[in-house]
Image (cartoon, rainbow, N blue to C red):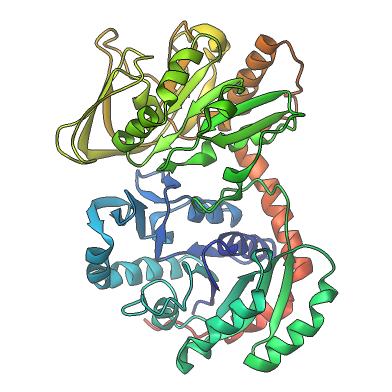
Length: 497
């Protein structure tokens, strides 16, 4: 007998993932044993479990909010877009191939047993289950064989709370339109509305709330305020951080190249802990030229994004800046720093592309995907500006299809590869999560620039996120009627064996 609650949204980006995380934290604080679940996620931010399985980063974040280690049952299907019309399909943590949107739409119904099995396994260990939908349940062109919104809610017999984003405007139209587009049996599953990201005095919404409740017969269970600089991972490319402008008051600027297929940009969250540091995502050479360090992030399609760097003239900028400021590549960005990236099996369209030539490495893409957690000490001496990274401990995970070697160095790849011209690369996502790593990098940059910054309060990312989960749960507790949430949970149907 397991209680469950499903959080759906009027559209993508309304804050479903954070609402789920906050509820997981609340129920954990109240002595329950909650767990998150999302049947299908589409995102380029992903995570690798301790047993080497790949899942959505958002569900990993929600698991940590609940005080749990992430497991693949929390997100059995992950779609990682490879372009505008296709994705790599990952089922139970392992890739099964690339599919076009049309082909996947025909195929997805065969995954229902995998979804049910994962959900049922969670019910054996956790209660309640907090389930997240995807996009909107009113995508009437996609409702056939739905496995992630109302189709899933009916499959597991879960009550639904519908979240609308007032920051984007038109929240009452969002809520009303979504409800009106649903058939009666699906409307009846919606037990309440949550209005999210409100700025100002919530009493200004009173008349609108009364009217939407009158029109739909569904209560508004809370108005959650906009939380500035929460510091938790965003779901995908809808993140607002890509729109940030350079902060003229910052003492240091980290310039991250905003690749078209950028992945795992949560790698740079630790830098955002420090108020003296501005992290800017851009493809504008004028912006990147002013950075104190340029980072090439992970990519879902290294070949295509490397071609993008050539087309945008960013290769010339990076070759010009290396030796003057540090250049750092992570995963796909690390591969781009080498001499060539080759794709003999056509995994990313085939062919071979010249890299930046800043590290003596060569990468060949292979079908077998490396997915593993890694930890250890940086035992090999690190050259250049970041020499003090030598001997530091690092923990993270790898997700890549490339095999990287150095004809000049048979021991490669290491946890970090560097050069005396201050070019560095690593396959490790989460490399900067340790305060010893981030603090060392920031102090070296500050010393080079001749400025002083305080890194004494820099904490490991796990501890930092824990404090943010508490902020999130406190905010939701004050904004949402928790007693009514418990009433919905108590009324939720029990699962039958």
